[in-house]
Image 1 (cartoon, protein in one colour):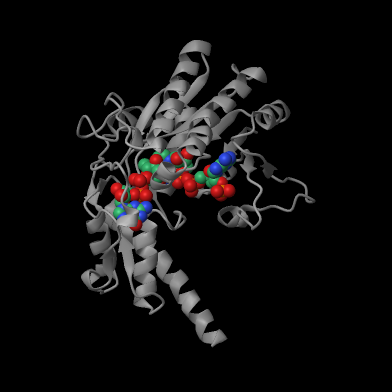
Image 2 (cartoon, rainbow, N blue to C red; image 1 turned 90 degrees about the vertical axis):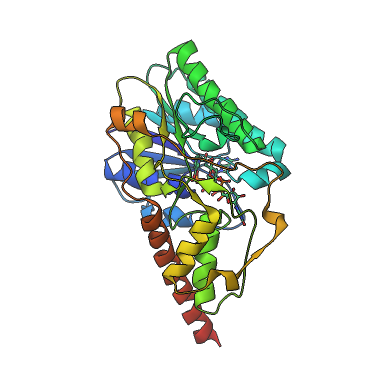
Amino acid sequence: MKRALITGITGQDGSYLAELLLSKGYEVHGVIRRASTFNTARIDHLYQDPHVNGVKLFLHYGDLADSVQMVKLLYDLQPDEIYNLGAQSHVRVSFEIPEYTGDIVGTGAVRILEAIREANLVTKTRYYQASSSEMYGKAQEVPQTEKTPFWPRSPYGCAKMYAHWLTVNYRESYDLFACSGILFNHESPRRGETFVTRKITRAATRIKLGLQDKLYLGNLDAKRDWGYAKEYVEMMWLMLQQDQPDDYVIATNETHTVKEFVQETFALLDLDWEKYVDYDDRYERPAEVDLLIGDPAKAKKQLGWEPKVKFKELVKIMTEADLELAEREAKIKVALA
Ligand code: NDP
Ligand code: GDR
């Protein structure tokens, strides 16, 4: 039985990846942060009573800021695979807390890579780094491939670029089996509520049921290559099952504006979006990433992968899921009135 360690297991991708690995028979260990409220909602359905035999999911308190704890964890667990998904992952927020973002997203990766060396796991453990299309920033080429030069446009993008090159460097310097997945935006019903897609599907469905009046957004012209998170985590796993470590772009090769996402969502709900969506400059960024579209040809050729869920299907999945949540919220309001 293989053993995997996931940082960021409570996030969107971490929860889907934990599901996938458990379904493949892995023993899964996740790093969770101590918080004053419960923060495990996305993985609660995977919880197993530790008093019963045969438990496969284990959670450990930790933080990407804490290198000593990471070394201890790796000594204790001796994992076959590590997936580093933990991050302060919000681009606009990274302009407000650039130092913290750099510490967790950039130095956090170094802490794990060094812990692998310290725990003598270089020949045993395979490492996955969650790299991002944000590294392309002011895109130097359209569509973007593994060879397109980076030009990050946010502290988050800069920190991801540092972690990305370190992953390459540890592969070249120490022969570590280390892979970087350069994933373009991927969404799902489990997407954090402050990312634009989820913000839109959540607000539109709540507007539909009279729970909200307006949706305030920033730049509607930015273009993104949006895929489905549940599919993308399979690629993380697949990268670590190859004979050789490498870096791969994972994308749909379609791009759409934020405005198109708004239009598609409101149309599904039979609403005129222009009546409900207003502009708020609070959601603008000091530097914007205008256009992302990835070319996943290498992943297709080497991993045999093609995205199944494209833009319209993705909007539908998210809108239907949020409509269900909004209906539940509306029922509770009626019951409590
Ligand atoms: P989320 O924001 O949903 O999840 C981030 C996870 O990181 C959460 O589990 C969070 O814990 C954890 N985390 C935050 N800070 C720390 C810390 N200091 N120490 C340890 N863990 C921490 O991100 P996604 O699931 O969407 O993304 C997963 C990874 O992939 C991230 O690294 C992200 O930057 C990257 N990425 C995401 C893309 C996307 O479109 N989703 C595209 C490309 C890359 P908590 O729940 O306690 O907050
Ligand atoms: P992004 O995702 O920055 O691409 O990073 P986000 O959904 O936050 O923004 C996408 C685009 O929408 C525009 N936008 C708004 N964004 C937010 N969040 N809120 C708004 O109100 C709003 N209005 C317009 C933004 O300006 C931007 O152009 C995500 C994260 O998951 C990163 O961690 C990941 O690395 C990249 O995707 C790939």
